[in-house]
Image (cartoon, rainbow, N blue to C red):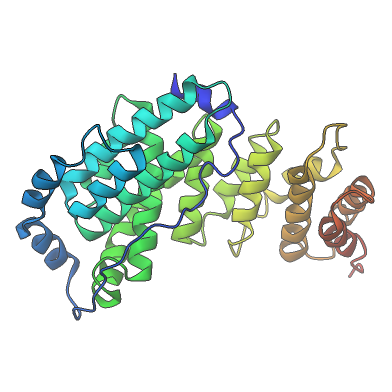
Length: 312
């Protein structure tokens, strides 16, 4: 089953890959409804049908994903989902997790996001209700990239894309918050990356809850904490629950993410809590001692600075 994939460590599996999104033109201010109406009237469905004949089995997976992107059609999103499912199951069947399949999975999902940015988003959200769980992850990656394309003005130009992005944010935000609470790491990571793209200032609480909720996966925790650093505020009642992470000793098999996690938490606490609270300094001192001379100069510095903060 697909959740099994989450227990693999696939380096860079959800990294943002370069995607060709050219063809953006500045067409003047239009409403989101006008953009979607124009997409519905466009001949892209015919183009998709024509290109579909040339996006067959003889093409390599990545070339096939590029072929569907070239169609410019909303209808090409569905075969991209199927490509993603094929790649995810291929990775799941591999003893090594097949990192190349995950890179191609991301590429296909981001192409679906480009098409949704240029047309409509409905097919992405349909993927979230699919019985194929690989479609859920694919959809979240695609939604994040759709918002990035609209933010950059690479669908129909900045003036046209900005109101479309604004209109789509609420739906995307709800979907990505749900992904953040998923039971497997790859979906949680994708949800966090999507929230980073959205940039809602109220997401600090859910992000810290996710950090706290995955105590046995420091790589995921470190990634979540790095996203949390981009949020301006956090619920005060959540912050003391970070203390055990700072005070937890590093194991004999520690990794760089263990150190990065402590640094991120020290940075958050220094920013959020007043110096009248003594416990952050105590926890930061413990973290700085634990990091010691390991490969964590910046982490040690962040925690040392918090530990040395003068009381007021």
